[in-house]
Amino acid sequence: QKEMKTGGCGGGDSSSTVVSRPLRPVYVAACSSDVRRALSQVLDSALQRTPRGGAVSISLVREEGGCATVWISDSGLEMQSELIGSLQDVEMAVADLTAS
Image (cartoon, rainbow, N blue to C red; front, side, top):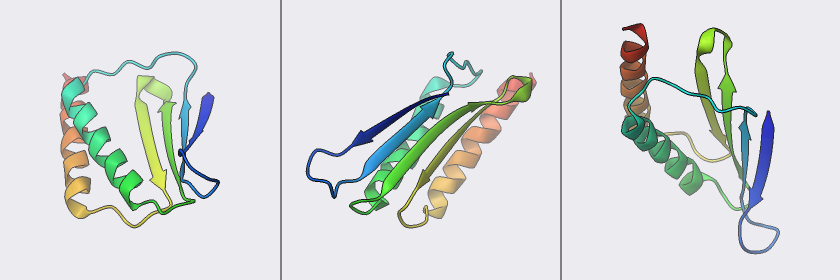
């Protein structure tokens, strides 16, 4: 795993982002625009709701059996239910692609 930590532009009270990923690329069978849209929505929400001094963590994990999992966590408020529904739609589409 490779980890990168970034900070905001200002003083020491800014938020930080931690990105953790495998050393080798991870390839998935999925519609790239759907995955990009879902990740963008979740990351935008996490960044907007994280208070100054908080943190957003993003991890990509290569699972056994060739699957990949993206974990996004933040120290902000809870995610809106419509974003959770959007993620479930993408998860179902990816599952359909990998099953066929």
